[in-house]
Image 1 (cartoon, rainbow, N blue to C red):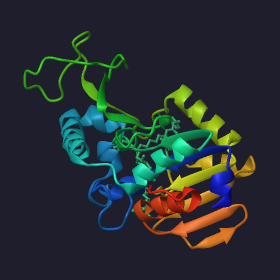
Image 2 (image 1 turned 120 degrees about the horizontal axis):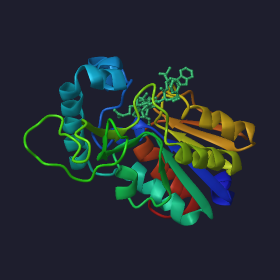
Image 3 (image 1 turned 45 degrees about the vertical axis):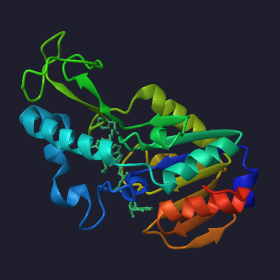
Image 4 (image 1 turned 180 degrees about the horizontal axis):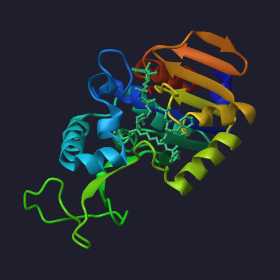
Length: 240
Ligand code: BJW
């Protein structure tokens, strides 16, 4: 608790696990994970989109609807509370659901894009509106190319400046949270190691982690929606 209360600069990396308690499926959890039912190479690569743009567009349209209906959970709210207390706080998320912003987190870096935005597959530019003439996927009003969700697929680069800012946050923080992520997808996963090497205390919150408490590494096993509010309560005696 001292580490949390006393930290001058805090960074947090979140993954699909933080939104699981909002009812959104993770990717790799047994039985419920998206990649248990679908193959990433059929849905989350530029090649998949080129092969079958309709399938990919419709899969994301379905997920956009689910994400739009989901509500931020106490884990999201607790991170927003930590941001209000910390001198410097950076929230780096791999999630595309926008739930951190809806929970009032301010300094959010989205490494893998956001499902509510759309861009042109040809021109790689954001597109705000297009004619709804029933075409799936719709076409870019400027160049006629196919439209796609503004998310980062396998084999694509992360938004460069955003990743630079995330790296900086990992290097300069004194406390780094890794929350609800399997840590399997690069380069996001390497941020935890970057923070550790730069001397930060690491706090991992995950359903699948061996409980551990050492001065520079805490592993807290359990749902983020319960653990994070409890940390906020203990550190600042307030509700998350
Ligand atoms: C809970 C919980 C609860 C559950 N409470 N916890 C170096 C080595 C090897 C490979 C590579 C490498 N560098 C790059 C690569 C290739 C690739 C990669 O990493 N592959 C690995 C799989 C091997 N990376 C890329 O391609 C990236 N681009 C890149 O590196 O560009 C440079 C480049 C260009 C060209 C060629 C080569 C390099 C891009 C990665 C894009 C990932 N995109 C996705 C889809 C986004 C859109 C969408 O949503 O559809 O991003 S894939 C998917 O995985 C999604 C997620 O953001 C990402 C991470 O998943 P996450 O969030 O960790 O979820 P899960 O399900 O894995 O884990 C959930 C965890 O929560 C679990 O641990 C649970 O236990 C836990 N949990 N409930 C707390 N209540």
